[in-house]
Image (cartoon, rainbow, N blue to C red; front, side, top):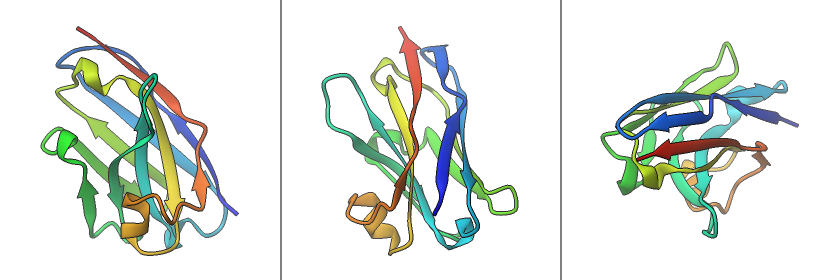
Length: 125
């Protein structure tokens, strides 16, 4: 069992940066592929970015390519989302997710085993 706790959300102006963290509590963090999703008001939850268990492979949604990066520290059991050049349309609750299937099951939301409770990111124009 893994519990995920996000932090780092807040209010930022357009063009600014934020770094989100997702701390995992449990013994099997290193076996999980990790991802970030977001849900804007009135919209479906959407895939943002993912990283495989050893940090060697990443997947990005087209909307964040070149602006967001994902990384993980398996010793600290933490995954990070660095968000640069933020836009008002990036405003959403950001959720951390973990799955022990293929990384594609993360990106397609078919293999999410654990979700965090979310952290709100608000980008003002």
